[in-house]
Length: 212
Image 1 (cartoon, rainbow, N blue to C red):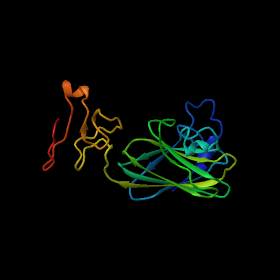
Image 2: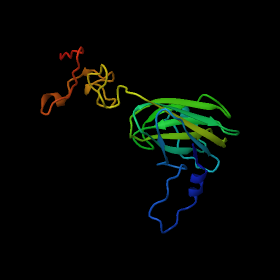
Image 3: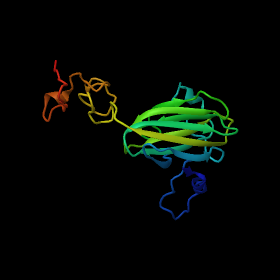
Image 4: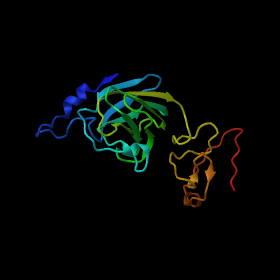
């Protein structure tokens, strides 16, 4: 478990002579949190002493969260399925959103279904070593303590950048018709297939590959 009370002590202005401020959960890029498989990681914190500057994707449920928030830069040690729970305490109406690419990048998940002292849950597939930004947010006018609980189950999935099981390819992105579709099967007519070094593919016993 991680007690973020120590982090809150770093929210004071940094010494003028310091080269960089210590990591903090009050704003992007967030407080680093390492997550390992098959054991829970917990962060106990509060939004009461934080800032209100991050909001969810426009038009979505998390866009309504305009209260104070905490930001965590979560790095899973291995690829797999990550379950994130934001458990609100007294006075807090929690909202949970997750971002990829960077701290203010694309929204990967949003959970906004409960009210005061509720629990929000999000589940995403993650790639080991990548950073995912978890925003423990709140509805405007509410603030208070919370527990952020993270559970990682190691495993493979289409999109982790490694061709596994019956996948013909896995380029690790969500771009369709670039040679490898969202089901990790060959598709499209990418320019890479017309020139060297060519388009990589994977062959396994009992899994024929057909080019059309």
